[in-house]
Length: 172
Image 1 (cartoon, rainbow, N blue to C red):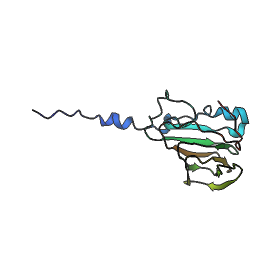
Image 2 (image 1 turned 45 degrees about the horizontal axis):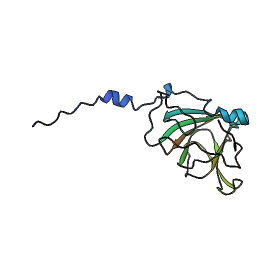
Image 3 (image 1 turned 45 degrees about the vertical axis):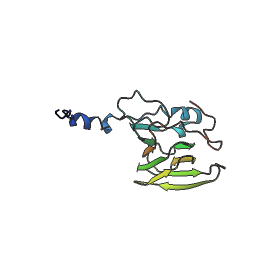
Image 4 (image 1 turned 90 degrees about the vertical axis):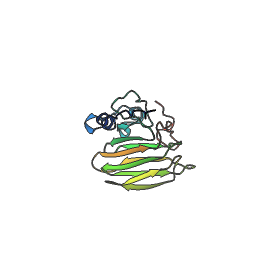
């Protein structure tokens, strides 16, 4: 018996299938637009997807986004004075890594959302928030903030808004 022939891997196609270039990305202001529609422009922010669709919205048909196997990765543009409301990812950790601007991030007490710890993050600072811990953020700088958002699952469950969140009760 002869050894089975191995199929040659097309390395050019393989590497191309693994790249999501900046030029092919776009700022999606609509994915989280339901929050701005309910709470005003201070909730306006853009998601820029690279791997998977994140936790909000269904973007499975977006062929510019690389498929997610273990986590999602996107950038978020947060205008000056804008906020990401308090929310909880019950099933996954979430990481924020600042590329531009200055963010104020907070983790909120699970039992009493009015108690919180707040820190400022700037260029190349990172915070990892464990699953089940409510978190919020605000752009406290004088330029738009741009930061990476990594969520630890191929397709996370939709986050919830605790009673202490300005988005409590808001749905799409």
